[in-house]
Length: 219
Image (cartoon, rainbow, N blue to C red; front, side):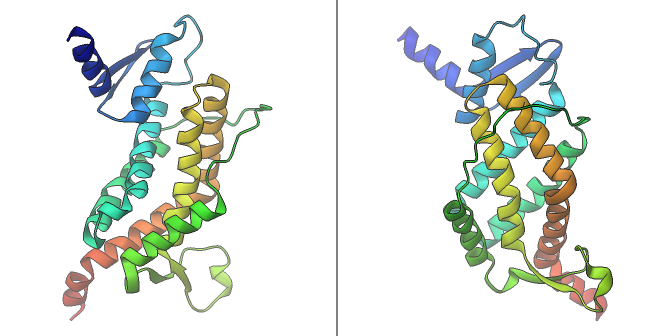
């Protein structure tokens, strides 16, 4: 029927236009909700904050969370390959944001509980097994130590997930002031905390994937 065709179209692809910026969304429940929110709102409101860079950052954040939420469908190598693609992209999209911290009194809800966080951490640790732990040399206080510090990739992946999942869940509520405050909080946390965790995990995962080649070079 015409209604069914219309529904299939609406659930497959959205083209969202905000001012002069455009964003293309592939099939994704979150972005269907996100796009519908903007399309239904009065476009005379000020959406200048949600420019192309912000939308792209949220899009990649949603893809990262979707990957973590579906870890049961991945084996170890698939997970490593996915992270080696998503982590650099996430770093790039975060670096593209030119946001200044602003004062606001918005109370942001936390969606990732300690139980949820530990579930993610344990899933990643189980996938990586003996390759989860590595020696980190870029960490706070390392200048006072003669040796590196043992770190777990699973903990770093879970730390990133915690911030990004909270961001995505807040966006699903569709409140402009909450979305704006959440992006600002997430970017602030990226600069102060999980950005370093991201590059540390990326370096460790690169070593896990290519350690045989690296060892052959040394030999």
